[in-house]
Amino acid sequence: MDNYDLEEVKMIIQEERLSSNILKSILENTTRRIEIYADEESYEILKYILNEAQIDTDTKEEIEKYLNRCKNDTVESIKTEEENESTLPWIFIISGIIFLLLGVFKIILENL
Image 1 (cartoon, one colour):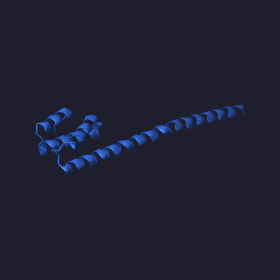
Image 2 (tube, one colour):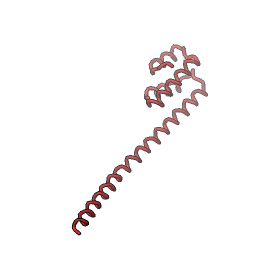
Image 3 (spheres, helix red, strand yellow):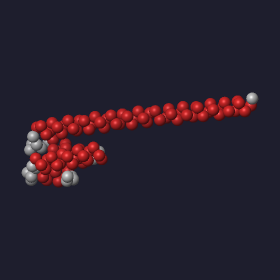
C-alpha cells in the first residue's frame, strides 16, 4: 500500500491518472492513517477528493459517511476525556478528606 500526501493526490487528479485501483489505494491509505494516527493530512485528502468531479457520487457519499463517523468518534472521545478530567479533582478531594479524618481519629485514639 502506498503512502500518499495531499500534493501527490492533487497531481494525480490534475494529470488525470486517477484509476479505480489508485483511488482505492488512496482511500485505504488515508483511512488507515486516520484510524491509526488521526492524521490531519489524510482528512484534507478526503475533503479534496470530495470536491473533484472525476469521483463518482457513490464514492463521495461513502467518504462523507466516513468523515462524519470520524467526526462523531472524535467528539465522543473528547467528551469522555472531559468527563474523566472533571472527576479527577473530586477523587483528590475525597482522598484528602479521608486522610484528614484518619489523622483526627488517630489523634483522638492516642489521647484516650
